[in-house]
Image (cartoon, rainbow, N blue to C red):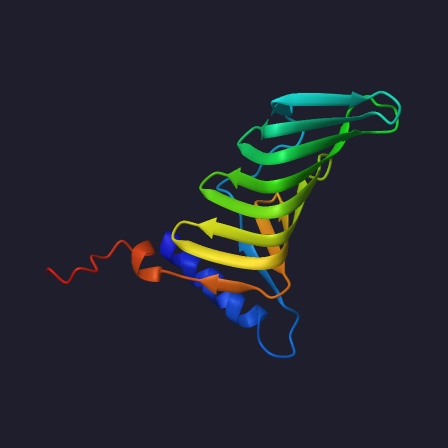
Length: 172
């Protein structure tokens, strides 16, 4: 199965990065769809709440957990809806890492819209899927469908021999 994922990624990169074509690539992200209606747990070294605008800033080794999704960052701003009754979105900055199942993505910034289950990652995006790596300027992850779209100068490094489970030592 991982071999087919690597093959799919390779084909997607080749198709999506040709001259004259839009530079974007669609890939799978995570092993199962996430449920954005699950509770959001945030742990950090400090919390600053702004009663005026209904926001909260977590800083220092921030960890956000929602079901199988994990996000870490230096700072996370929590923005509530207009009634301040529920979280509308999270804005993460500084060494952002998003993990869902075996897949992990890193970036400078991320914005997670809770209702839609969409995370927009930007700035030096690096996606790791097993031994394969993809990088881009921007990645939009839909946690509810388990898919991601990478855009802007997409680059990939594939290691299909490691994915196939074959012995590469030649000791047959």
